[in-house]
Every structure is written in structure tokens, then in C-alpha cells.
Amino acid sequence: SQQGEEDPQALSIQEGENATMNCSYKTSINNLQWYRQNSGRGLVHLILIRSNEREKHSGRLRVTLDTSKKSSSLLITASRAADTASYFCAPYSGAGSYQLTFGKGTKLSVIP
Amino acid sequence: DAGITQSPRHKVTETGTPVTLRCHQTENHRYMYWYRQDPGHGLRLIHYSYGVKDTDKGEVSDGYSVSRSKTEDFLLTLESATSSQTSVYFCAISVEGSNEKLFFGSGTQLSVL
Image 1 (tube, each protein chain N blue to C red):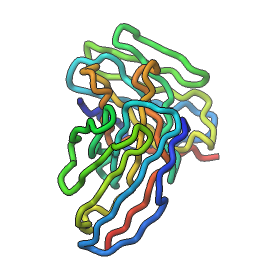
Image 2: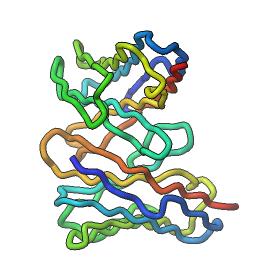
Image 3: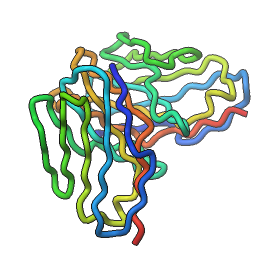
Image 4: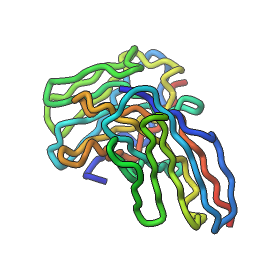
């Protein structure tokens, strides 16, 4: 398994603005997943993008994947106070064990 | 929440005592995981299981053991708790056919004094 590294570590924006966070990884992947964690809670799966996809949308979320640069980005459009959370990426190599490892995350604060 | 229950939710114990955390699932999924989350380290995989009595180590397995005698229960044991094991522990399951997506429990806050 491999770990993704999220950047920036912290991000503070005004409500209504867009939030972009990035993820870098080191080896080839089968897919890459993004998760959200609200304070004091477990992680919640947001979106999965496969290695043969370049962009994926889900509601206000847009994920891109650039396998040549080994990087992904998560864009949250028209942010809301409820989007305040930590966001984690999890690159999955597809080695058969379903093992996912997580980085330190990006802590997003959306100011009303 | 894919029917995951962690118990206890909070525990305070003393150094040197054994501690067992329980993860229970109601949907018969094969893969289960234990993570710990610490400030500055993110989530780190302790152990995982791919079936009854089939377990393997993660990246931070020292000081921990696990058991899975039934599909629905995955136990994490700290044989002799240390202060460095103070952490929030999360159990997770992956749902086959769900593209490796993990579902997480609500966590156990463990304090070792």
C-alpha cells in the first residue's frame, strides 16, 4: 500500500468560495479515493476516481487525476460552513488486499 | 454507516493493563481494519483481516494483536498498554463490489495514563 500526501495542510476560506486541495502519491494506482472527516467522527467516503479517468464530478465535488504527475485534486465549489472538515486522499494500488493508507489530511475551515 | 459499532467509545486505563477494543459489523463483510489516528500522523493502519482467522499486520502493529473468530467481530488487543498508545482508534470495513470503498466506525478514544 502507499500513502497519499495532501496539500495544503490547512485551508481557510469564506463561505461561497471554492476550495481546492491536492494529493500526491508515489507509485502507480488502480484508483484514488477522497474521504471527509468531521471533527470527532469517522471518515466518510466522498468519491473514487479510477486510473483511466481524468475527471469526475459528484454534486459540488470535482476530482481530477493526473497519473503522469502522480497527483489528484479535489475541488469543492460554492463552499458552505458544513464543509468544514478534514479531507484525506487514499491512493489504492489494487494489490488485492483492499488495504488503504491515509495521509495527514487537509483541514478545511469555511467561515460563514 | 454499514452497520459498524465500536465499543467502548471512550476508555481510560493505566499503563501496563491489557485493553481490548471491539468492532462489530452486521453485514457479513469479509475485510475489516483497525486504524489509529494521532495529531501530526494522520491515520495509520494497525492490523487488518480478510476473513475469519485471517489477519495481517499494518504499518504500526507493534504492541497490538488482533483476533477474528467470527465474521462480525474484529478485536484489537493492547496486551500491556503504554502512554504512546493513547489515540483514537477507528475500525473500518470494505464492501466487496463497492470498489474498495471503506466505511468507518465512530471511533474509540483511548487514554493510557
